[in-house]
Amino acid sequence: MTRPRLIIADDHHLMVEALRSALGAHYEIAAVAYDANEVLSTVARTRADCLLLDLSLPGQNGLELLPVIEKIAPDLPVIVVTMHLDRAVAETAMQAGARGFVPKDSGLEELEAAITTVLEGGVHISPRLPAVTNRIALRAAHAGLAQLTPRQHEIVRLIAEGRTSPEIAKWLGLSQRTVAFHRTNIRTKLGIDSERGLLRFALLTRMSDDGAADGETDAADAETDDEQDG
Image 1 (tube, rainbow, N blue to C red):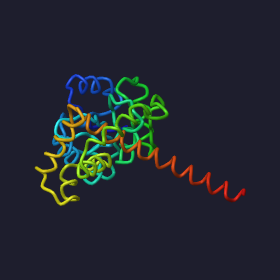
Image 2 (cartoon, helix red, strand yellow):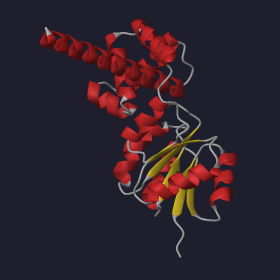
Image 3 (tube, rainbow, N blue to C red):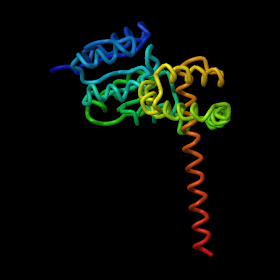
């Protein structure tokens, strides 16, 4: 019986070797990749049944890679295997095309269950995820936006939508160098020391905006009900 073929993408060699060893008994490890460019080239040239994708990769983060992977290999299911135990990140990953989301500190049993579910056409989101994103973090993210220019607000919104820097440049009619300059300035103003931190800030901000919009909708519905009752 042919074993399912997996691609493992993670920038930590020890993690790759640990997964290779743990999964090798039931799956064929078709290829491994350690950075964003390697992920895309590997996906393009390798026949595989599932990709295990870390989000923190050199070059581009996994959330930015997901739409590109879907274009290159639309039938390749992706399971995000990450250290980020955050529902906002998980929901964004699933919206970007992932079929599974498993924290790195989960047991091997959950990862294998996720692979089985995804290979059968299903979706797996770890039950260990918190029900909601931390609301204190959301308020902090929202307050931080007051320091940004309108153009920087727009870039943060596009980052939260999972758009890459080239896509942002095209969307806003800017050069990629200008977008990179804005991203650096945004991080400096907010005291964020990495692109991964900027991505998390953008995601938290989007969740905050979504929550505010939901609250406004609920308030409007309540007013309508009151008017009808009157």
